[in-house]
Length: 395
Image (cartoon, rainbow, N blue to C red):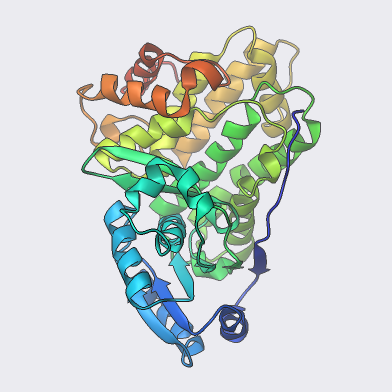
């Protein structure tokens, strides 16, 4: 296990209907001028918007709506202008990871005189400026951004989708599993895959003797594998939504990743797909992950994949390679059974036109050739993309 420093100051309010009697008091801690951010309007259809506005009756509220999946830099720019022009005190982000990610960037951009894309390209700039406090109300179980320091922002003009770490995690996060009842099957499946991918990225790592972290990750994986299909079949199953919501938060609030050695691999590879084709992030991860697993499986990595198979999928057998292969097949089958596409053509990517450029960018952005669990060159990433065009290699 590697040395680490761990700090997370996010205050979590977990449970049903807590916003209806706690939100106003929480917001009052930070000031009266509120920038309310949200996405495409689903919070109005569900009635959540009216519940929030009732709590904000005594506040000055400025609204930024229309924040899209794979949040775009234009939304951050619009939020920066609103935050500066209205001198807002706090941001209230209501939605999924895209809304909260964009809000984190806006929170920094209020104190930056230049283009907020600078803060994405060079996140260290954010450490030298202030950041507005963020309160969020989570409506989708996926990214874990409600309890971490990261954001991922896209720039369609440059075909870039990049992560940016800020100085603070959200001040307060409201996690009400009932708010996920109306989430579509597509987004429920994609979010569940995203949770699993966050765990995989931290689980498959070369740091030795991380039994505590591995055990936590394995437990969350088992929970997601169990409850995601139930949430799909029974959208208003509270226990299913609760386990997925808390699982998403725990998967990426820092606890599971401390002591690690390597950078993430599949996420930067998928970010290129999202940057070029604007596909659903979790679905892209679901397509790529089993192919990456197959590609990096070797005599050296088989013991860790076998550990995953035995402790998560309850597989038995003494042959690590055979257990590892079965575990990868089970991972693929679980993703397929969630009802999402399992190939790139299934999400509209019909040719290899951008594979070389995407592979080079993925390697460059995260230094996959130097710091990955299994080091990858651009040619290796291209092969993973190519393998994702068909179902070959899976039963």
